[in-house]
Length: 297
Image 1 (cartoon, rainbow, N blue to C red):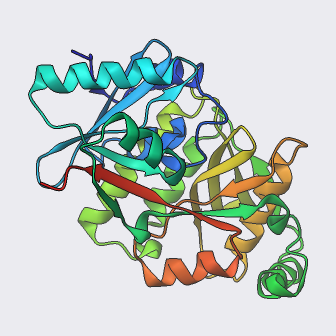
Image 2 (cartoon, one colour):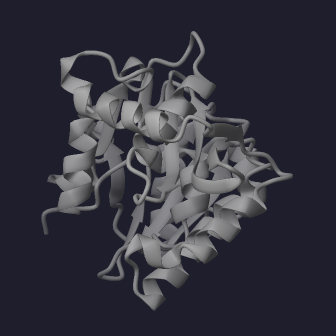
Image 3 (tube, helix red, strand yellow):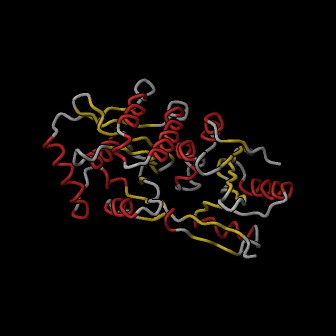
């Protein structure tokens, strides 16, 4: 039986050493995202011969495996999943599967004849260049917000996040929790999730930065590069300063820019209409679909 355990920074550190850059661009398999959302998604993970495998408890109580990702042998990992399902006496199901792996998995497990797609969980993928200056007519709205922010706040700075100043992000969330339109329970849950990634920031070698004005934090962001994609895991800013989100996203992209990065993954919209409109306004080049695979009966 596979040795699944709750998500910890230690196991994510091990996983990060085995990431196969070409496996998938989905945010679900980025260590920082797993640190942030793993507890919320009722997920446990294990490392099997260089491959990370997740086990997720669905809302109906059923268990689903995630895609094996790493630098080990993919087919060996599928054999291990099959053996594990037999020992647990559960049907094999998969969740958070990218479209390019559907045929591989349904060929290996022919009983997986029910393929479900949920659009609200699709990741928004963008050309990296979109966030470096917001050039072109399609991004004129973002550019206008940036120009207004710079005109009104010429003394702003983008300061790199580090282990030495990570507490600024914690304090920002505590002091401005009401600004993010959360009830008490939701605010506590969000802060708890964010504390997971704050605690793992240095160990997982994540990157981030602050938008600062006269010593005040106006916003912060955290992400990590994997292969050709920059994954943006967290982005929080005060909207009372018009243009903060646009400037923060642009500043982080420019800070992280290198010859290898081609795309930015800004995750899903979770079905929130306002968030959907915002993400669409940055002009994604693709929607990274996620599927659940299970037996029809």
